[in-house]
Image (cartoon, rainbow, N blue to C red):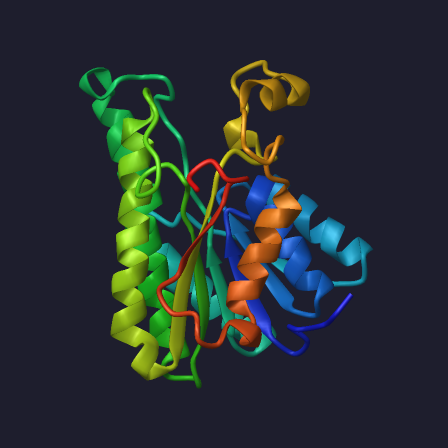
Length: 252
């Protein structure tokens, strides 16, 4: 294993489960000190324990990304704990009202997705950019989706709108802040090995059978993490405003 992130500090939101956890583990395995953030302390502690079991360094911080003051405090606590902030991965998101047509979408579900998936990314970007541009720059990766700017499916309209907004926000922020040394990109997975892609009561085998891709399988969490780490690494130094789709060819 290479150590592309040795000596750096990374922050990952939504790191208690799924893709966020996979990204946090991958960053730690490559040498980063990782702040794992989310709303549920128990799952964050599990992520930290997994990192420390493999010899990595991590700390858990509870925060609600839909609250600007929480995210500002999260960045401050990360920098205080580890001495800086070099990489941020804005992964926290929710899916509400899956299978519901736009005309029937519950207003509370709509507001929840907007607050976390869009406004939460904005608040995170603002706090991270404010720190990075005053401390030598950094790399930010937002977690998008192939649903939204790249693909629409029945019953996913509310979620797709929020992820299309993340794609637009990523590009706008990338152009606004690259001159300040803050490089911003996005990764947009398709169906992947994450809890969000499972229907209630569905097994992993049933999920695999439900999704069809040109690749012949769904994307692994490690494959999504690898894409995130590439965009966050110096090897992607000329990647600015990229929305990297990782979906097994579904939107090719």
